[in-house]
Image 1 (cartoon, helix red, strand yellow):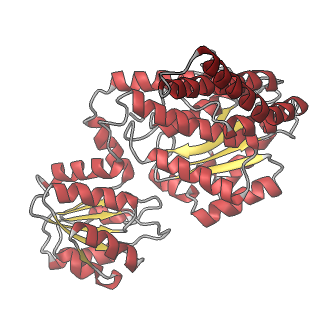
Image 2: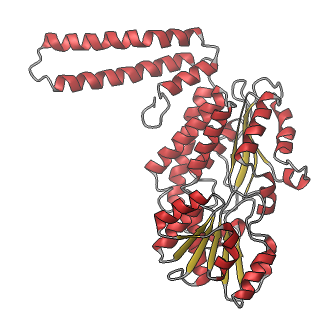
Image 3: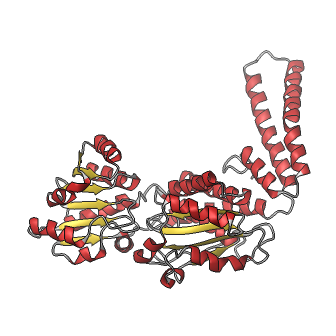
Length: 445
């Protein structure tokens, strides 16, 4: 699983070439290229991501920028229209991913250019590049990255279009293939691993530190397996809300050590940039537990549990990378679903690049708009006539003529605008988005 899958561009060539119109670069580190101790140095909080994106577009000379930062990846996606040599931006992107100036981070950065950058984003959104292939959370994380960049004002029309198309392709892959049905999430996979460590979680007490989405998924899995739940979070309201949903008890952050004495399993998934559980705290807990087995699962990046806790007697510490190794050892073969989802990605990437690579996309866009309008018109006329079984030929002709006239008048302004802006790809992309001309299953095929 930790081997990076081959990137097959829609043309099948894998060429790293930029077209004049399509200058996109993806730069980042992932669980495939860097261990957790490196990834946590590049992790971005939402405020830090906003600051970096504004800098990239406002002072870095980029046309657009977006960032995805999760437990398994920190990646920058940028569009470079005014730079005569897009390769010149790459050393800067490596530095931006290395805020502490440590060379060990930069050496793990992977770069995707042009078509490959588009396909990589599609694979990320679809879950094909995840630690748990097809995981359910990654699409939401890509949506959140897109939304943050929109709110920050750092998406140009091209990058916005690519993100929207990647999200649409991921939805299509989940609808048409089995890529998401058997995968679950990293949180659920973590509980499955905990069951192997403890033998069973039924009747055991589990403490969740953090009350976000990952904790909620883990908690629901633990509840289904019969565990007794406790929840702690710096945001007391979020902990109370999650505890109320699950019938769990709430633990204050000052009472973590006392609560851990009673627990067999601790799942940590906070957004803290400093360890929540250090060696001294865990050592004191284990002394009070007389060394009884304690399973700690750390799903956070940066890590919530200090790595030297792993050496304590009776403690089994599973961080996100150890989880990946265990999942790889026991991975099921989902080759058919992966192949089917990969084919969806290839086809949707091809359709996306077909739009991006046209020097004048106004003509095919006008054609697609007219075809969409005609499809809708015919369908509505048919529905209307079905409700009028006594309609004669004259009435049928009048309804048909009225619908044609309405469509023609409604489309006159956008078509005129498209023809006038044939050399502005931003106008074309925004109009295609406004009329959903590229939505999988409803756009031009």
